[in-house]
Length: 174
Image (cartoon, rainbow, N blue to C red; front, top):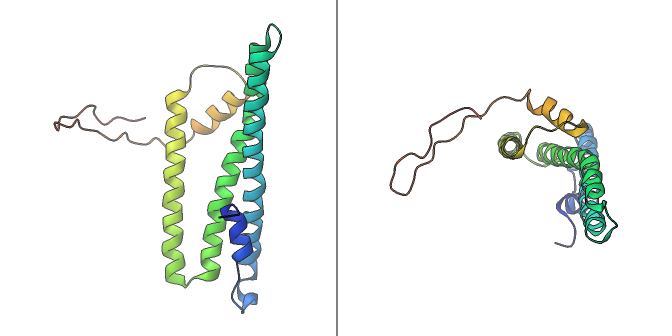
């Protein structure tokens, strides 16, 4: 499509004619779409600029450039992480608000559950991946992320089997 999904949703969105009944849902929908567009744009632009300029500095800069590039990327990553999380959450909320505006009550409820489960799956994956690749390090972003992740509920690890049917690991808390 020529536009990213949130922008396409804004362009193609036509609320029902009895808009006075869904006015607050429509306002919430548009706020979520705009917030999603802006924060996701920041995330993509920030990630791109960081990777291009930090790599250029590390590879072509004077002595000590690698350390300076790594420190700079480390300092800037918090904004990228936060914008990603806000963008994703606002996209999912916009989907739910849009469903309640456009669909029947039953369809909107089912769609909301599907979006909620999908959002939980993304959240679980991000949390599991963070824990897998995190290590002891001291700094603002690590303290911030640790403070958030340490308060999240623990997820059970799924037992996997080899092609021969024997278990490879036992269930344990992550």
